[in-house]
Amino acid sequence: MGAKLTSRILFQPPEVASYSQIYPREVEYFRTKSNIRVPFYFVESDTPSQVYVLYAHGNATDMGHSYEFICNLSQKLSVNVMHFEYYGYGILKNNSKPSEEGVYETILGAYTYLTETLRIDPRTIILMGTSMGTGAVIYLASTLAVNNVDVGGLILESPFESVVRCLSRNWFGRYIDMFPSRFRIKNVRCPILILHGTRDKVVPIKHGKEMLKLARCKVSPHWVDGAGHNNLRRKMGINKYNEVLKKFIIELYRDVNSPSLQSNNPLQVY
Image: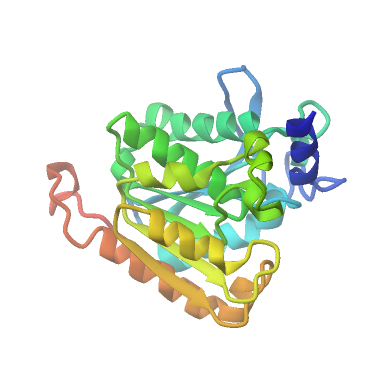
C-alpha cells in the first residue's frame, strides 16, 4: 500500500503526449526485456563524433518536451544523443503504467540498444539525467560498475538522494522508498558532473551536496545561484550551461589510453 502511494505521488506523466510517432520527427524503437516497443530519438552530431549521451528526462514531462534540448546538446557539444521514453509516458501512456522497475527496464533497453545493436563502446557513453532521470542513470551506472563495466561519465541535473528523502525524513518511509541513489552512487566509478540550483524547492540543494559527499569517484559540482528546480538552464543561460557540459566532456576524453580511441580514430568532442 505504501509503495503504491509513493509511486502515485512520484509519477506524474503529462495527460497528453507532446509528440507523436512522426512529430516533431519520426521516432525510432527498441524492445525491452518485456518485449515492449519503446520510442526514442537519436540525434547525430553534425560533425563526426564518437561520444554518445544517453539522456533520461524528468517527471511531469515526456520525450517530446526535451526534443529541442537534445538537439541543442548534439549541435553545441558535438555529441550524439539518444533520448528514450519511460513506460506510461508520452505515446506509451495508454499501453503501459509508470513504475520504478519500468524506468530501470527502459534505460537498460536503451543502453543495450547502444552497446549491442549499434555496438557502441561503453566508455564513449555519457549517462545524463534530469531530476527523476538521475535515479535512472545512477541505477544504470551503479549496475554496470558492479559488473565491472565502465561508462565514460555521469551528468546529474538536480539529483535526489531517494524519493522518500525528498518527501519525508522519517525512518518508516524508507521502507517504501524508491530510487535509492544515495546508496548506489557509492558504486559509480566514472567521473560525475552535478548541477543543482541553490533555490530548488522540489529537490533542495542539500540532496546534490550529499551526493557529492557520498560519491567515491571524481565529482565536479556546479551550484547555480538563484536557480529553482525547473529553471536551472534558463538561470544559467544556455551558453554557460553548454560551456560547463563541454568542459566536463573534454576533460573526460583528454587522456584516452584505449587503442581504439587513439590518433587513427580520434574522439571528436568539440
